[in-house]
Length: 208
Image (cartoon, rainbow, N blue to C red; front, top):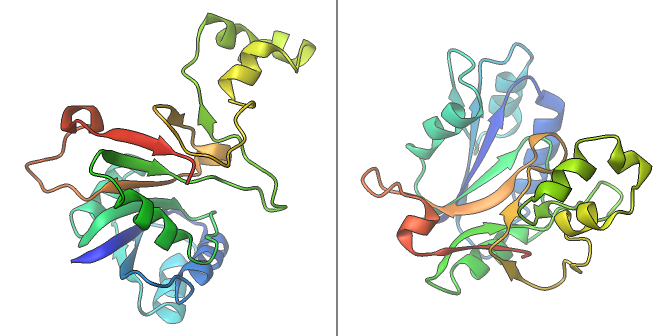
């Protein structure tokens, strides 16, 4: 069995998808992995680009746009990796990042989900993990109060701005940074064992 299946859901993002695949194909070492692109009935040249430029990538062409969840599920049933990485097409991956993710995921039987640190194109940090929100978070994140008091404690705590993002943290939730950007690792489930991480008695970890 392969160590990792990278699943990328695409819809009309041919240029971004090409950049993402450029950082994946042939740049990750030390682990065996496969790349699966699920195309949700794009009308641009996404499918032709994958076939022509990335023949090693498996393309699943959905006849209709199934949406995010259903589109990814189509790929899950056809992957063979021990772990599945859900990666958005507008994400580029640093060299050996996949190796580090898998190595960490394999380091303990209690790890069920791993989320990676996300960086902006200029190398600055994206605040992509969150504390669970409270009433103060709602007032200062979703109303004009947040703009009036941009350095308020409620928003800072919610965004975990005190966290240096250099050490491992667990038990928090991973936010789809920017527009639905996701980079997280989860075990590949068999059809009869698709349960939540809590039901399996494992933890989510963030900060690799």
